[in-house]
Image (cartoon, rainbow, N blue to C red; front, side, top):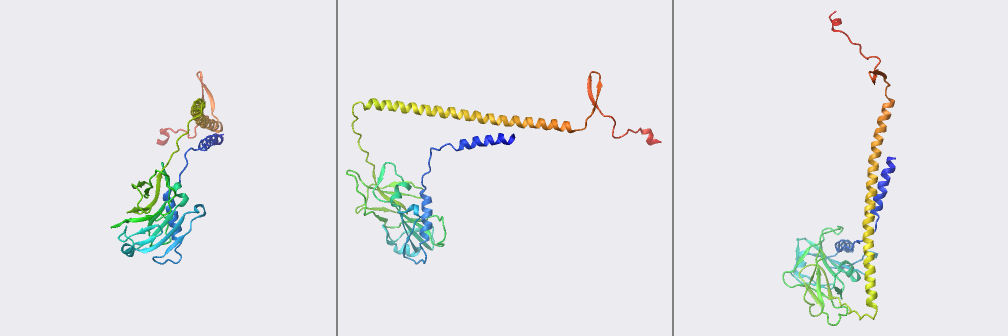
Length: 311
């Protein structure tokens, strides 16, 4: 009986947990960076310094382009890397913290740009390009923290030569995403469709979203629109009311089951005490005045007078 009671409580808990959730998880850009770092390092089968290696990505990320290059920190600061895909990295770039060798990782997120880096109110006219740096001490390592790249003189340039058509009247802007996914915009794109940066990160070109003007409503639509809004409002009210009532019913049911379990345990303890009394040694009952009381037939130890010891 106790097992059935606990089972009912468990089933109620599971039914509450199985209710559909409204919130949905969004793709994590930092998790994508960690995954692409792993796959870019796999491209170094026979690593050579200063050679660009094209990487492969999992089948569920088909379309993303990946490349990596291993460099010595001293040579990288002295000479830079020009070109590194769409990036032109000048001399004087400092790596922090200092490492003997580093790996530059290039990312082109293609159609996955808006998925991992959504921008409300803006449209992409170029794919998101990533430039990240990692310690090259262990090419089998995963989940490495990215290194900071800081320019000393000239900025790093990104060439966005293949821009999509920019809507008339819109101005393109460069956007940079830091490691936390926070976006920062420039005033406008540089001549030649290039962007400039002083740090590593993810970069793209965006324009403000153009919303089409609403067409005039035909006669009679206003009445139908108000009727629909009223119906939607009533539906929402009933949904909220039903949710509240359903929650109260579930809470009452849970409280009832808890009290039932407590009463069952109390009754079980009483039954155990009764069973213990029935199986114990039966005592003879004696009438004492108007009260019946149990009495023992004999005592286990016979009393002995102190005079017997003296004798």
